[in-house]
Length: 236
Image 1: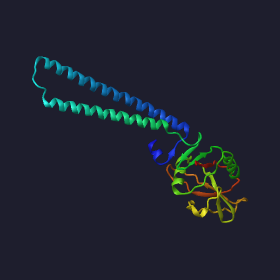
Image 2: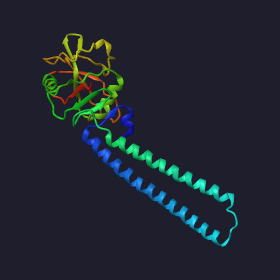
Image 3: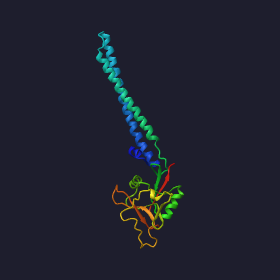
């Protein structure tokens, strides 16, 4: 979970709640363990003090300096354990308080929320569905974002993204982002705009992959074909 937080990736509310519950249980058990240790040390300390007082009643010999040192070390151990307990309570509070800024079934990364659909639509209907959700087909701004998307998608499917060729040779992003300002991340030999297709290949997608951890590069495809798709909305 912490790796996800540090990289800016926070799972949907449902998953985050499950993770928080697991952490809560683990930290609660650890807290009981620490409390048990501290209680045991306190009991031991008081037993030693009672034993010392018993000895003093029979022998008025001054208490050796070594005993004070032992008592100081004992106190330091208890302070350390109390500090650990406070730290874990703080971490617990932080973990339970972490919530995704996105609605359920969306994933948060950096400053955007993403939704990858299991259903398949042609490019136009996919963009329409994203708009109905208050978003648009995903705009891939850089390599880091592409790697994030590659990590959360099913291997065997290609996914529509918000890239379209409205004029031959002129690709544009659906949100108005200047295409020239983003790094072109086309797969090998793409875009090829196969001429044998009646409708050409004027819509961009993230190419399917067959191995885990491999990067999904861009591909151009026939806009009338049905594929799953990814919606994106900025979390402002």
